[in-house]
Length: 145
Ligand code: HEC
Image (cartoon, rainbow, N blue to C red; front, top):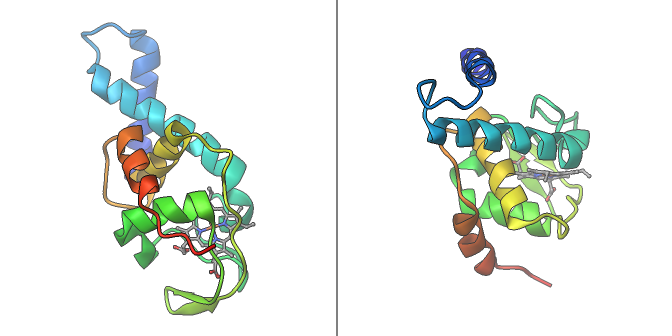
């Protein structure tokens, strides 16, 4: 993952230097980088307090995102971001039992950027996860209210 950041940083620099000239990297690549950068901002603003900047969580209070099995179920992750979760949960062999707040204020595009960032950094997807996909998932969340 360190290599990945190195990679991104260089490419971002390249993007800045190129100033959008088509000779320097594809539009898709630039869009992806924008998603990653915006996604990081959302993460720092809405998630890092608890899960920490490095995604490793905090003591017995907040579970890690980095290396969590939860990432295998992308739909569940998207629904958890929107609706929060509570009750005991085991992540990487450790049990947590605090409430995670809902995020009703986030737009679908915000969640798309956020989820793109999470999967780009800690998951196995290095492409945009679009807002349409997020919308489809959110329509089918099973919320117990
Ligand atoms: C106020 C602290 C807090 C904030 C802010 C928060 N979470 Fe959580 N999160 C938790 C807690 C606590 C749990 C476990 C809930 C439980 O015990 O059922 C959790 C669980 C999770 C899980 C499932 C378990 C795991 O670790 O894989 C994911 C994924 C997750 N949060 C992602 C996020 C994302 C993304 C954000 C930002 C939008 C966020 N959280 C914001 C506290 C927080």
